[in-house]
Image (cartoon, rainbow, N blue to C red; front, side, top):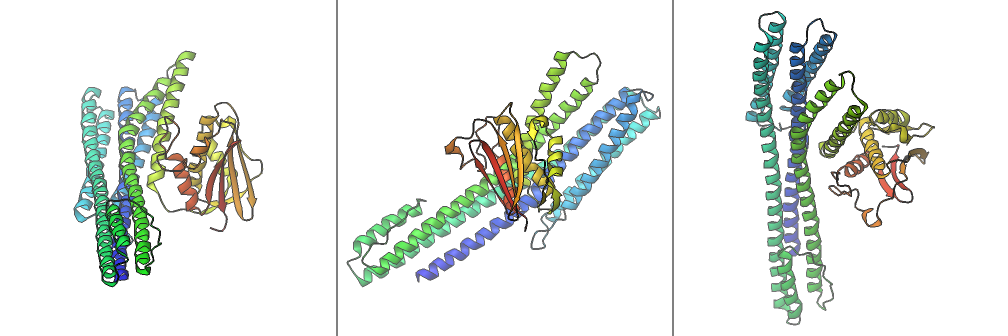
Length: 469
């Protein structure tokens, strides 16, 4: 009887876990990519709008006018590519061959794409009318502002639709967790009741263990995790104790999985909000800063101020990238690459590349080029923050079909009590950190079938990647 109860309970728990897997698949493959694409479209449109204003305020014969025009066309091409991606996303299917987006959502997404196409054409038309002398600059600016407002409204509505979908997913996960807890509690109480009834009918000498089982069952039903000792003289009671201990541990595992899933869902929503609310104004600040730098006769003090602003914007962008790298996830694109090529590409993205010492000898590594860059950039940036003046040393070697890469700095090291936690999501020792950089590194390396660890004296992160992936 007990085996039947536990079997039914396990089957129901498995069904719920499959539902959670399906929900997470939608979250990973539909909502997060859609929001990222929308943010990129809006950022490029902001650039187009600023360039439109620059062209209106600049004489056609000015040497900068052609540069503005070329930048405008490049941004327009980028938007068209992203609009095509967003349109195709509405037809993406899950592992069962079913469309992620319901028909109504597909229609809304396609309608948004049509509206954004129309607004871009309107923007082009206003510029063409201005260039042909049909309208003045004073007439053109309000028209561009109206187009920008409509475009932004369309993006905002589409983003709200995706965020609402993410919130529904989080609610569904919580409901599934409650259902799993309820199933576990009912099956535990029922199984305990059956076991107690059988023992009472067969022998009175088990009354004390039974009372203990009742107390323990009530505590388990309230969510406590208890490990029981099977020291009763009655073998049936011992079996019940072993079963309860196992069920108690299973409950702990299920709760840990649910908590982790809720964290990931919250991180996904945080990523979308960060990208939407910070990246766009950050782009405007950067473009404005670049325009200001074009001015002549800037003093050394003014240039230093510009550099400080650049560094601040880099820190913000790095934190946003950490969040997005952790949550977006994508299949690996494994191929053979030169580690030297990967490191040279990394150095191009870092402002303090002169402090970084890379290995003289090259090794060939089977990996995803872009994801390996993400790992190395995160580790190097951490090393730079830990050691503000010293050299960052990177070494590599091929041992027993494994590529070993080490990133070493001469900083103060990581406190011993923090070593085991630094790869956990949301754990950070830095005030300006997100707690996702190293978690993202660990996830990427494990996708490659490898592992990452850290040691002190000196501080060094060690990556091991097998070459038979």
